[in-house]
Structure formats: C-alpha cells, structure tokens
Length: 240
Image (cartoon, rainbow, N blue to C red; front, side, top):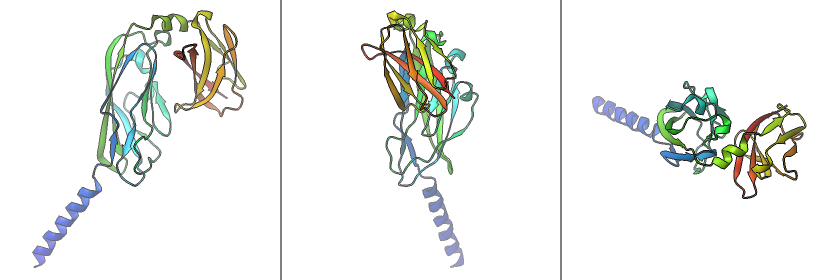
C-alpha cells in the first residue's frame, strides 16, 4: 500500500510540473518578411494564452545582418526599444508584464533600409529572436525576420541625402532642413516605442521648426512625409 501511494504521489508531481510549464506565450507570425529601401515597422505581436500577466525575456539568438544594417535596426517590446550593437552579440532583455488573455501585445522590429541612413549592403538576410516566459524558461517562442534590401525607391534615396537637423540634442526647438524636391508636407514625431507624440504641418519649402519643449527627455524619431503621405525619411534626435 505504501509503495502504491508513493507512485500516485510521483504521478501527481509529474502532472503538476507539466501544467506549470504549459505553453503560455505565442507570436502572431513565426516569420515576418520585409522588402524595400525605406523605414519599416515589422510588427509581430506577442500572444498571452493564459489569464495571468506574463513577463517575457527575449534576445537575438542568431543573425547574418551586415554590420551597416545592425546600426539601423531596433527591436521594441512594451517597455523599451533596443537598437544597434545592443542587439548583437546576444543580450537578454526583460519586458513589462503582458496582461492575461491578450492577442496584440506590443513587439516589433524596426529597420531603416534607406541608403542615406547608411544601409548600403543589398540582399536578403535574417534575424531570429527567442522569447521565453521569465518564470518558465522552457516556455518559448521563436520569431524570424527575413529582410531584403532592394535598390528600388530611387526617389527616396535622392531626396533624403540633404536632410539636416539641429540642434541635436534639442531643448525647445528642433530645426529640420531638407531639399525642396523632397516634397515634404508633414513631419511626425515618435517616441522610442513607436507611439506618435506630435505631428507638424510643413509650411516652408525647405525647412521647418518643430516645438519639442513639452516632450519628456529621451530619444525620439522624426518621419518626414510627402504630399502622398509616404515616409520619405526617418531621423533620430535626443530631447534634453
């Protein structure tokens, strides 16, 4: 009888362990593809399959991105964005808890493939990201980003070469100077997690002065858009 009870206890422990490490996270897509010669947000939302908040650890586990791509690549979760050399070699990052039963938890890769931003190498390359439940390391999901840098969008490359921003860092105003041929009509300001915080209508043909006094200190991105609503260029600045 004692032996039978011991076996039952062992079976119960195994069942408990199995339920503890059940799959709790998933991703919107196993693979996301990007192709072009501009700035791209490659969203790949995290899915929490449980009813409890989950803190996720993630890191880049492999990539063959050229060195000139790495500096123009970032990964954003619901807490912050990590870019450039912080992505590779591998470093583990921790998110804020993702709420239970969510299907659109913030996670994305950002990459600027514009030649004017320094990504001159063409071709197809990949980056793989591993995500796991912080308290159950074997509960994992893998995301793969396949990116192709093309030689198209010649107008974008030509029109972004003469963009200047000053002062950078900025305290109250950020001046943006650009080529009249770029047809810039609007400039949007985004914070580091990709949320738009301001939009400016451009009245001049070659410059604009953006009031950034009310922004919190930190890193921001400006996106210059033409009369068709297309993103012509993306630039980064620091608010102090």
